[in-house]
Image (cartoon, rainbow, N blue to C red):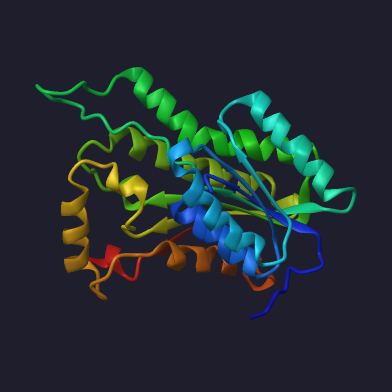
Length: 265
């Protein structure tokens, strides 16, 4: 396997990297020589499982940092970046920033049995799942952390255009995330920065399983996907890796579908 990023002292900063798409991405990029910094919010009960997953990254002979913190807290963010700067030294740079924060509200708009979606629910979800990309990106940019050819990659979903039950707040966040990504692509291209979104197909992750009727979504997806399969986190991580390569330097401001053709039906 090619380790084209080895010996470059370049890092991937993965927000939401302890499970699902973020974790798979961290593992994939480590295999190709990028040092890894993971920011995540995990419970004590998950600690042993997560440590086993992180050990796989460490086994790739790369530098590894992980922070179990609230990624939305400015002081916590400052601590992460101070520690990362110390680890990178004067010559280290962040090659890619991966946004995989899944902290959304899944309340219905109308219900006689459950609490319904309110204004603050939208605000909290959009801040966590969209605006946080810009918060992290802007601090990294202002501190000159980025490599000369940096890649900003975010994860969106088909819920950006299709209404799903209980998904209104997350859907609004995904649309906002895509808009922020496109504008980063436009305004920061002169600094060598490329920004893209990946629209993953339905993937069996903890985030999906929190959605009401997620089993029905999976069953429907298996019928509509041309390959009759669900997307895997590794499918998505492979494309993140491709977007980090030199050959992908002319992809900018795009939303790439990684779903095996699922969205065709």
